[in-house]
Image (tube, rainbow, N blue to C red; front, side, top):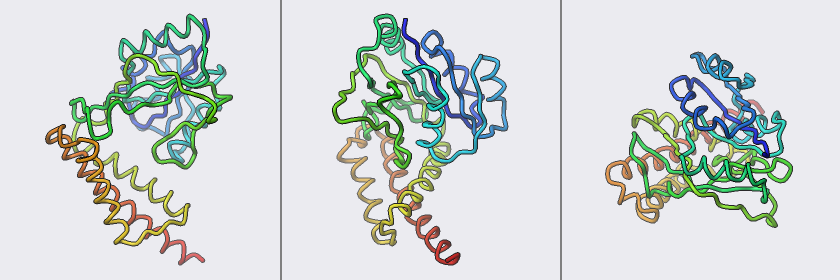
Length: 256
């Protein structure tokens, strides 16, 4: 049977980490956890479950995930978050390829996202295909992309697997808002690094575009109040990203 290394990045995930670890039991032959100095029992729980835990300050999702990948001992890496679970069907798919042997370098599966306990079928949230299982010699994480993208050669075709990755994004609207605000800061850093225009007018039109894309083009309107809330947060987080980017530029000029 082929072996899989699982990687997880964590920060104060004691309420969810056990469920995540339960879902990959029997799938992962080793688990690498990169923890951003949790102040709860996350590290204690992970270590008690046999995970290798390394503490490291958060430097961006792609950077953190690639660092976790670099610590794995098996060729194939399964990247999963503490707020994600493998559905029974996806577990069976992964067990099957472990038993039969890997025939592809990268594998994709759909991710079903939940907002405050409700599955979201639109807003661009489903099927939301992810590359989360790959041969680390042929793929790696984009260190600059806010969307946490796995990059690989154009000659490779991801093999789709049956089953969903269940992603419980938030339990409350406030929690989702906090998550989006963190993403705004990362997006701002990318805007500055790429030397893109960050003026307020451009930011406003980008934000309106994000709202309309999520609510109309991607069908958020069909997800009811949850769809409106998600689309609205796309607008606000984009406005904030451009605002933070402008602040970063001003601070940089002061130091020059």
